[in-house]
Image (cartoon, rainbow, N blue to C red):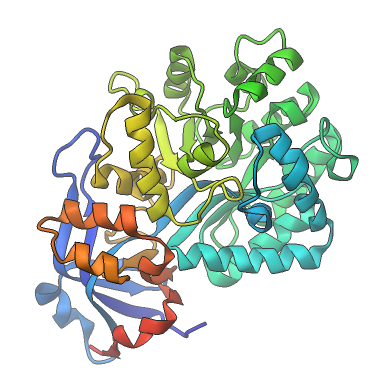
Length: 449
């Protein structure tokens, strides 16, 4: 990995937010020729290059990204790192897909070497796609969590992750018990939560694979550890919803299963949430839950179309962020995910998602949804220096289309419809260069400013 000193600066066009673009026009701010100065992992100054360049002095390395667009690093609110080996598995909907492809893949993580190799590959792929923070599912094996956090700490990325809890309705080699799941999670929390930018999420897979006892113990962990996260799945598939109804006949809804166990509230992240009633959205609004919208996964498994603008209803908005969900999702690229979210927004209600709104859901809005908005999601002094450098001319087609763009909105929309990992010129995490697209590293000339 390239060595970066404690102080570094980046020059180029950058975008950030001054408000929520779902509620405020002109919320997206562009600095055409900007300078971002980073020190000890944080942004210390940012603004016009002409104004700030005298602050560089003689010994601050400066990396210039001409003809690029710099954003805060992308944030993925729902993704399974062990499933990267099962991406692009053909022909099933959610429940049979789990049985045929995912459970056998996750069983391999009993081997810590598999976990370590996969964690390295997965995190490298995230960074190649400009993603610097993610809420990540591991497997039922504690060593899968250790392997993931060890690699994330080495890279300096801010990650949220947890051991999956499953004490029924799964293969015996993937089962824990209510008590062992609690004990193993508690040990992992003590070992990792709040250390080296790592954060822990209590992670029951979904209500089908956890007994009421396990859910209640998970709720106890979640409610009694400050700053802890909770992540699970909610209302993704109609067969799944029917199964939950049969397993929990005394609960008024799928969401009520989790609420009664203490698994809702701020920092609770529910993946998918496609088949939601108004009272579910209202509950999420009042309790402060977050919904992770995973459009590529929902399309791939035929699960349905998430009603984004219903979730964001102005009278009771719910926190929403984007997720790639790999392996049911088809790409770790949040640019590609933004493009699919645009299409799904039309399918779900004929409301067009703008490029600024899509970028918000992958950066500042996601940070707010995850209660990390004081740390990440914006380019501003005091924020952690996680940055994504996008190349609007990364492919011949993108170059041709971008040359015709006459506004920032057009440039961003082109990136999110045509872009993927090839459009990420570089990724910075914690003030360090952690990914540079190999064929164009020479384009980012490093010199003393």
